[in-house]
Image (cartoon, rainbow, N blue to C red; front, side, top):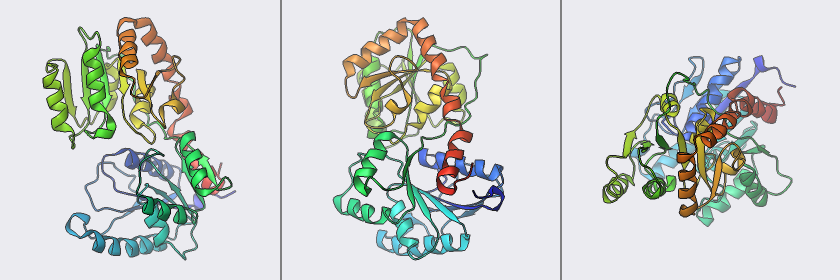
Length: 361
């Protein structure tokens, strides 16, 4: 068993911008620094930092910008940059996150005697070009192990890499969502996600429109994106301007969770839905489409949340109406959802990573 005080861990992430992958990796980094591990944090992109890291963490980022380089020249510079960064970290283990970035990390580290563990963060059934998928299959076998966020993701990777490949299911940690018992919950339904088609915000708007929403509001937290204009137009078309609020990027999500009553996840695809984890940890009554991966690992239907067959808007509306009208049922779901605070605490999840990659308890 390895001594934590003598551990040098290299974490490789896309950036420190706002995002689920970035949040998961930065949370792990800060925890490991807090317990005395020496952490080196290597970034793929030189971009503004949204997440703050412990000052003891050494951050390495490229001195070249993807936006000002051609795609070919960028990757020609990125691979030696990653190789040099990993080599100079003198880490005893590398942990890399990112479906499109893990192969680059493995390729760049060819010949280096540093074990590399990887984790994809998108839906396990995300459509990827066959040539790139072949590239992933060959390179992923060079890793020492794969961390899957869900049981579905693990099954998909075993099919790709073989039943004997070293795969461990470790869900995302739930950040320490602050509870505000003094804040009164409002008649509001919350959706969280950037304005991308995959987040299915249009599906939430349509379901809300069809529900018995008298006196209720739909609040959408998340930055603009390719779908913004379509979403704004949909709200106008359905004459919901006085009932739907676009909040943009919200810095204090904990307070927003605290004053909401129902949470909707209507994504078309997720790797592991961080927002659903946080909503449950905050004590929200959650309704989620049962998409391929994620929600069914978190929700026991009608116990700590509600699952609806993916795309069944009629049933989604039924469940929204049920929770709007049944305050007692909302309370039952809220109470049981908060168990995730213990089951998927940052300490619990971060220690599972250490045990998997280091055999540290």
